[in-house]
Image (cartoon, rainbow, N blue to C red; front, side, top):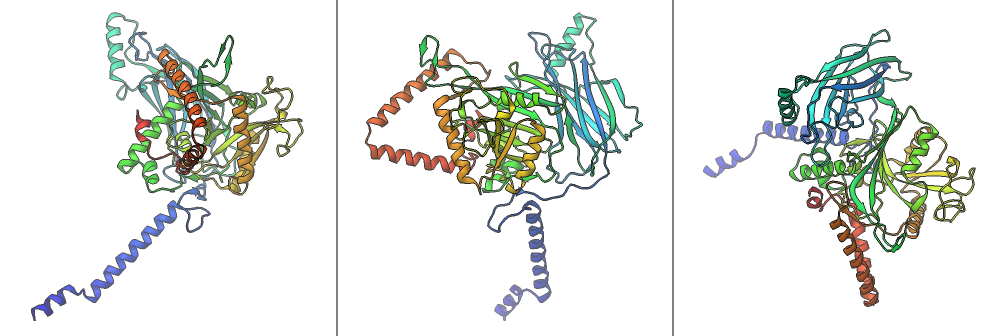
Amino acid sequence: MTNDREHQKKQPSGNASAGYAEKVVHKADSFQQKASKYGKGEKANDQPAGGYDDSPIPRARPGFTVKFTFHRATSLPMADINSMSSDPYVLAQLNTHLQTRHKQDPHMRFRTPTIRRSTDPVWNAEWVVANVPASGFALKARIYDEDPADHDDRLGNVHVHVDSISEDWDGIKEQPFKIKKRMGSKRAYLVRGCAAMFSSSIKLSGELIVSVEVLGRTEADDGGRTWTIGPCNWSQHLSPMIGRLTGTKEPGAEGKSEKYNFQANQIQLQGPVPPELYHRYVEFKPFVAGMFNSKSLRGRILNRALHHQHARVYNYDRTTVYGSFPSPCKDMTLQFLNLVHWDKGGRIFTYVLTLDGQWRFTETGKEFGIDLLSKHTMHSDVNIYIAFSGEFFIRRLKHPHQSPDEPETHPPVEIDGGPPSGEPPKDLAYYSLVIDNDSGTYRPNPKLLPQLKAFMEHNLPGIKVATLDCTAESEKMNKMKTEQRERKKAEGKGMAFVQDSDGEISSSDEEDLDRQEANGRRKKKREKAAEPKTTIGKWAKGDKERETREEDDDMAGRVDGALQ
């Protein structure tokens, strides 16, 4: 009897079994909905979630084109004790009531140039934004002191709230807003307080002078998103990664190392970015989701490391070069070619295009030994959603009316009237931008390459644009990139990188580079003297390991080096 009773207790009733089954079905449906939400796109069943996302932009009435002007600031605190001043800049964020496609979409942001050694800086920086809704906006302006050797100190905040706008709205004309000190640097305000004790001319409260003007209704079919119209600002960042041009000659010396500043570039392209260009990171490894969402311990470490890498590569300091164009023009295309060094050296660039049209790129090809966990993730600053990503390079045509697909281009052919024997011609008609979707992090949809091409042609007038599908045209793409690398070996030789906190090269760095060069020569001699079979085996093993790292996009296993 006892065993029967125990058996009856263990057996669930019919109602309990039905309830349990219902819960299982409910959880399964919920899980499936979440999976479909985060895994939208044209994918086979065996493909990881992410990549192209076809989520539509929520529809709304067309809004207004608004110009924000950050004129100047007065009586800022002194963040630098030695100079009794600051290096201030404004980082603005625009919030509206428009619904985004996903809550993880990045905010609309704008950064002014940095004014050196001033507590009363004058920027007169303009930011023109399209489709600001009639329901108004909230503008958050944070004022920082630039400090490349340490973190930037916040000097205060200014919030501008407008409940509604229209074509008849009077706007805001050079209105001073009191800077809120609550989130500012305590050290900076302490220094200013001490200085105010000895000088009556120093004020304790600062102000930011801002103007806001409605330029008219935005000419668009849909007002579901905002975008930056202009100006087309650009910046060049000379990062603390010093390279060496090995095997080159300086006047009067042979084999002497040259200083080389690694360059990171940003160009604000004129929006709107085609709405189809919308991609999410691909979960090709279990740790990737945690890295982007910063949820697991490993994910938080990787997320922090990549933010740190982005800040180091796109580092703002005294060597940063700024520029601006009112709208896309041929001068802007010339500046782009200056940033990529025209067709010199067979360079290959890695790029990311953000949802607001900011184009970020560096010369970080696979032959570069830079300690980046993931090139595209670093460029995007660990953004979950971007517009497009891949690689690009420049080819010079033999004739200005030649197609980029014709074989006579530099590289690989040595065409007269330019590198490597002379300076490149400045006629835009001779140049072609070859851009692809070669990105393992976001894996952009190749069907959207025509939209990317049209967008680039609009923003870079005068230059020819050709696209490559990294999958369907892999053989052609690899052949062209191999030609670029061979040209780089012939014209630019190799490069080695060191990292230094202040961006300057010191005598110890020179010694390190000399040792690296000497060790490299000795290693090559040993390899030549070694048994061919052993040497070939090492090369094959090294190539296989490098391919494995590239497939994982260099995301794992190098956190310690990134955090140093």
